[in-house]
Image 1: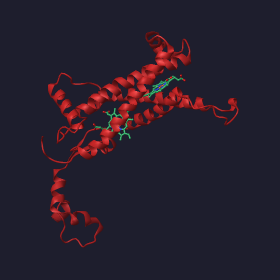
Image 2: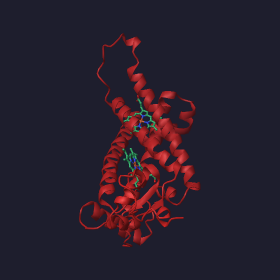
Image 3: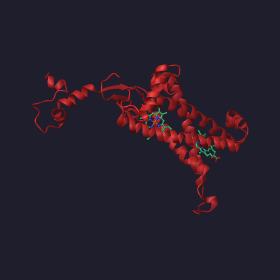
Image 4: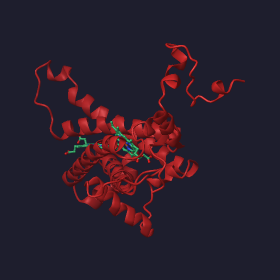
Length: 261
Ligand code: HEM
Ligand code: HEM
């Protein structure tokens, strides 16, 4: 077979212009071809991890919106007779439904950590005994603060993102689930399955108002995480030496250069 057909990286000098199929390789300059060879891709985030990420993000957005409205209800609206409207009921229903979907999805994500690749387990443990990890955590903090000129390359999460995910999601979201179900147990009533499983939390915290406040403060910590997380994902997609946004969509991490360090 003609070698030009086999190797798409070699520009085809004979291709008639404009020939749609050959335009890219035909128009490629030597620098473009060099750049194609430098790029490498590694498969990092498997399908369950990506599905969970986006489902979880959607549920978090619903929970933040409805949770905020539960804490700070809309003014009474004269859209209908009080008995004919159920707006606040729908807001609470959306909150509880999203909370339950989030809980089941998180349980499935934990189970997947036992079966998935090494990156699927990253979020659940911190390698604090590894001095190299600590060193890179500090390095990454400096990179985020514009104090070093060049970032490092990571296949999974960088140590700073890793630590943020552990504290805000693994621990933080568990806290939201536990306090959320403890609040739900109050509504479901004594003796209900929710009361039997999460009723102890109310006793531990002391009273319902304090439980509401803790659950509420937890929301603000997740809001802060989300703002920084989205900023960092977009910033790193542009400034780092590897792909970010496409990675959490396709699973593939593409490196922009072939330097080892
Ligand atoms: C438009 C919104 C979002 C974008 C663009 C986005 C983007 C990303 C990207 C690029 C990664 C991969 C980071 C890496 O490789 O180190 C990631 C991972 C992650 N994101 Fe988001 N994210 C969004 C919303 C959220 C929200 C709302 C949450 C939860 C509050 C969240 C929690 C996570 C977690 C926990 C991971 C790690 C996944 C794992 O290891 O299983 N993300 N996100
Ligand atoms: C990240 C997830 C979550 C966020 C951001 C969130 C946010 C909030 C906020 C801000 C409030 C109002 C608290 C106050 O009174 O000041 C609230 C109330 C509540 N949340 Fe969540 N929540 C989350 C997860 C959950 C989960 C998993 C459940 C479990 C079903 C849940 C159940 C409830 C209940 C029962 C209330 C009280 C409703 C009421 O008093 O009318 N939440 N939530």
